Length: 301
Figure 1 (spheres, rainbow, N blue to C red):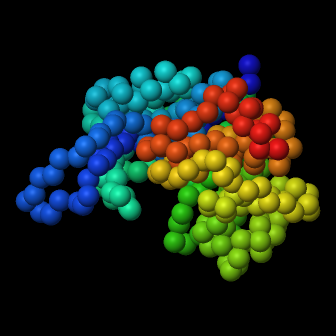
Figure 2 (cartoon, rainbow, N blue to C red):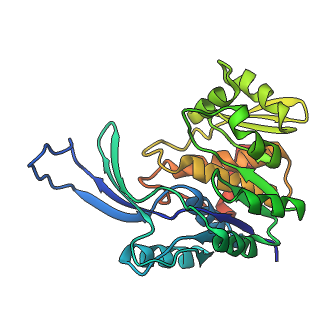
């Protein structure tokens, strides 16, 4: 059976809501609402794909602590099969406390951010992802595995995130290997060295026949073998919290790739899943089922 795989750190979010301000040093304030959720990043995308009925697998670091156990439960509930890369006795997941203010958000995080694989972890991840139709790519130490998978016919989808030193030169090896890359406006301008998103999209044709540039709340640019188009966002979705929007977009986009839809349809799926994600607080609170996605898609067209 076809599936989608990826490797990356697991993030757990503690969300504090209903506060007017951040307490000063020595102060204690009570918030009106609180929730514990899995955070954004690669695991969030795989969970959203699992909710859409696609088998997904993740190689990640999990321990025996309460946060890791919570993550294991969430993976199981949402159709994601985790394979553990961690063998220590500490807490290997990233834990973020997020204070959601009326007009802004602030965060502090425990953890090292990313998985730093050794030789055993590389082989474990390869065995997890071998045979996948799609594998999510991230920057870091898993490049040898991505190369093996690409040679075997797996589709590679790259998501870099922001980097102050982004450039074609720095990321050339990843961009050359990837089949798709999904930067947002800021990332696309930085990595291409251009000053508007349309020029950035055309600059990305150096690497990709099918180009995607997310234009934040406006929608998404696509270029399919030279044919430029723009897919606007879904206006009926009202933004409450943008956390996880990019991860959710990527899930809808890869849903389209998984089922061999044209690029424009893949982007429209991504606009729907990304748009729905911002309607609730947290990376994984707002989502659609496969039936809902198809219904929104018919309405979108």
